[in-house]
Amino acid sequence: MAARPDRMWPGRIWDGGERTLAGILGAMAMLIGLVQVLGRYFFPALAISWAEEVIVYLMIWAVMIISSQLVRTDGHVRPDLVLRLVRPNGQRWLEAFNCVVALIFCAGMIWYGWQIVDTSLLLDERSSSGLQFPMWIYYSALPAGGVLMTVRYLIRLYRYLFRFDPTTMSVGHHIGDHELSPDLAPLADL
Image 1: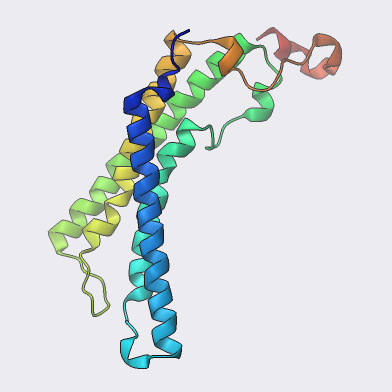
Image 2 (image 1 turned 90 degrees about the horizontal axis):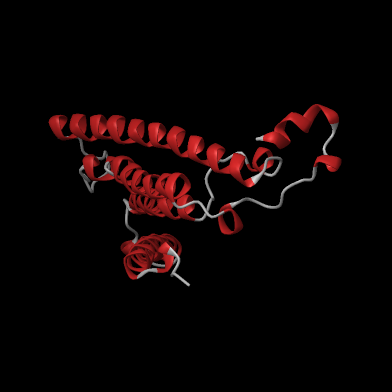
């Protein structure tokens, strides 16, 4: 029995790296928030003025990094209800189509995200707080998340086109023809 591709070592390292990095960013945001709250209410001299800003930056980066995991685990938007109405071969082609649409969306994220980063670099844009954080670092989360999701969707598309296994890759169960209402019966032939 061959090992599942997502259980091979490069996949485990990639998954673990994303989850670990997102966890570290979330923990840092929580720690900064805790210091800010304690400083504000108990030790005003220790309160930091830029805490909310940095928390947002950290959480945005964590969300964009972990968005790749949503692709891997089928957590992004997809037509689950429709998929459950069609046979596994129809699901295969609907999933492949969904991957193509998602790849187009990711390409837009990368392109427009890079335009935002490039503009921020050209203008030397910085945050308005005393921290004067370079905004291009914050904006880079958008194309970075787009690249991570693009790679995942390319892997997913490859699997649906060339390595499709209906027993492990189909959604839910097939609804028998006798269970379909007459207006949905044409979907059963897909």
